[in-house]
Length: 85
Image (cartoon, rainbow, N blue to C red; front, side, top):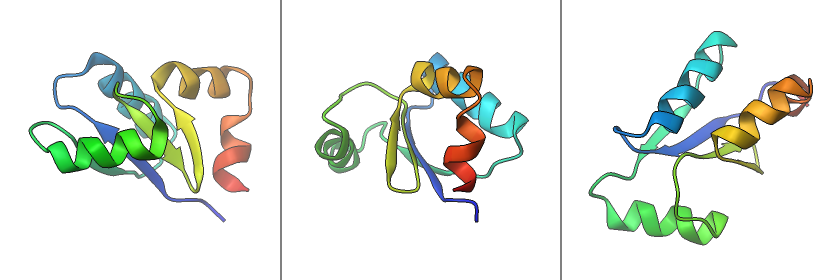
């Protein structure tokens, strides 16, 4: 069963756009949480991840990390298994 994907992102972030392209290429839907101008949402992201940069991506309960982490999982052939498990 496919898991829910949540991505904390900014509208002007190149890494966020790259992550969106990768998810779209795979045909996966995700919930966007835009942190621009939303200090509560940014604080929520920081509490959950310990990070201040965007994107921060969750697949189900797993914190994947940012775009580089997402791309590495894809390159290693592990992303589909994480999504489908």
